[in-house]
Image (cartoon, rainbow, N blue to C red; front, side, top):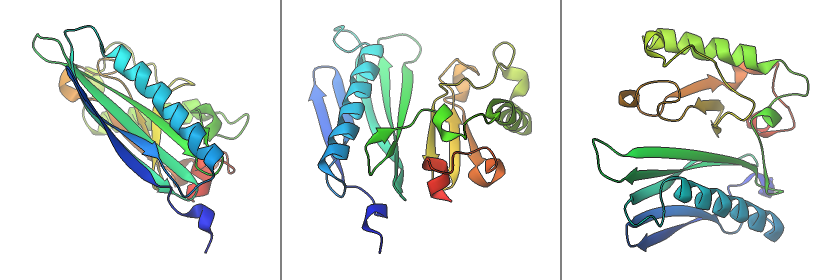
Length: 202
């Protein structure tokens, strides 16, 4: 058995203080200490930014949130943290952020790094997402012209699927929630970086 391909240990931690009730993930074990430290530092940095974005410490915003493990296998750890902020009004605001790591080295991958150098991946992904919008009957409700994905597009990896998502109001009205677009890795296998998270999942 290839021990390095086993899941890494994940421990949930709870932040509970005035106006804040939040769970977050910490990597603990089943990888080397340097990789563990690197992943936890990236998670902590992203969590701080997420809480600040949502009004942490302003004395008004009530923050609740948690994390979801999307992949924890084949050297790939992909997870999301979400925070819901309510400061009065008709409804609150949810912001979600994701990280995808090489769990052996502790390296976080950017969206662009998922794909082979020089691969023209953006037009293909845009076409897939536009087709999904049309299949769901959502395309006519897109806020403004559909501009598609960006080089720093939010994403996570779930099994053999790349999931691209957009923030609330970025693509569609609030009632649609955070829109997710699952894309089978097999449908874009000619574009992916074989020595990266998508390649390792095949």
